[in-house]
Image (cartoon, rainbow, N blue to C red; front, top):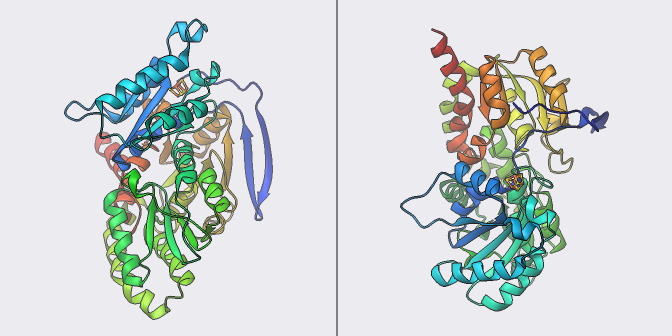
Length: 429
Ligand code: SF4
C-alpha cells in the first residue's frame, strides 16, 4: 500500500438533513476519471476515446479494460513525450497529426472524445480549443469533443459525468413543450431494454437514454424534458441538462426491489399513471426480484459492511444492503455527497450510521479495523492490502462493470457482496 500522508488533512462534522456527516480532506485512494472509458466505450458504439496523456494513463486504461486482440479498440492514448513536456515540440501539431491518421484509418468513428489527463493539464494543453479546431476540420463526418479524466480533478465515476456533460451542449433542442422522459447514466443495453419496456407498459413511451448507443441518435432536450438519474454521480451532467430546461425527477436510485419501484414510481407520478396500473405493471418484476434475492439475504443478513469512498454509489447501495439484505452498516464513505441527488436516499439509511464524505485514508483505515466489518467495499489500491490482512473485500469498480440496476439484476447486485464472503468461508474450511 502506498504510505498515505496526512499533510493538509482537515475534518469537520456537519449536518445533512439532520444527519451528521463526517467530512474529511486528506490523502485519498481513488482511481482517476480515465477509468470511465472502460464502460463508456462499450456503450457509445461509434465513439472513440483518445486520452492525451502519459504511459501511466495508457497502462491504466489498458489493464482496466483488458487488451482487445480480435476487435479494433475504441480507445487509445496519445502519449505526451518528454519533448512535449519540456515545451520543445508543438503538442497541438502532433495531436492534429495523430487525430488525422486515426480518422483516416477508422471511418467508423463518428464521435471522438479528446480526454485530458494529469500530464495534459500540467503542460496546459488546451483540449477544448483542440476539439473545436478538429471539429471544424472533420464535421459533418466526425464530431470532436473533450473532457478531463485527470486524477487531479476527478474520481473514477466522475469521468462518466464529465463525458456526458460534454455531450449535453450537442443535444438537439426539443420542439415545443411536449413531455419526454430522459434516463441519464450509462446502463447495460439489456437493462436499458428492460426499463424501456416497463415505461412502455406504464404508458410512458417518449423515452430516451443518455448516453445513446450511437452518437447519431442524440436525444433532444427542452423544457418538457423530465429526467431520471440512473447513477448518483452525474452532478455536472444534471446541471447542464437543467441549463437546457430539463427538470429532474427526485427519486432513490434503481438498486434492489425497493429502489427500482420508487424510481419507476417517480416517472409514473409525473405522468399521472394510476396506482392500480402502476402496481399491475410492476408487481411481476417486484415478486421476481424478491424471490431471487431471498438466498442472498440468508447469507448477508447481520453481516457488517464498511464502505470506503470510491464510486459515489455507496449511499444507494448501503440503503439497499441494509433495508433489503439486512446488513449492518458500519461506515458509509463517499467521495462527494450530493445533497439534492441523495435527498430520497439519505433518510432511508438507518439512524446513527456514520456517513463520511471525502477521505483521510489513514484515519479511515483505523476506523475500519476498529469496526471489525465482515466485508469492506473499496478500490483496488486498498483491497489487496486488506485481503493480505485477512479482511474480506469487494472491489467497488466491479459495481460499474456489472449490470446491477432494476428488478432483474437485484439478485446479481446482492450476489456481488455475498460472493467474497462465501469465498473467504470456503478458504477457511
Ligand atoms: S490521468 Fe493522472 S491519475 Fe490518471 S492515469 Fe493519467 S497520470 Fe495517472
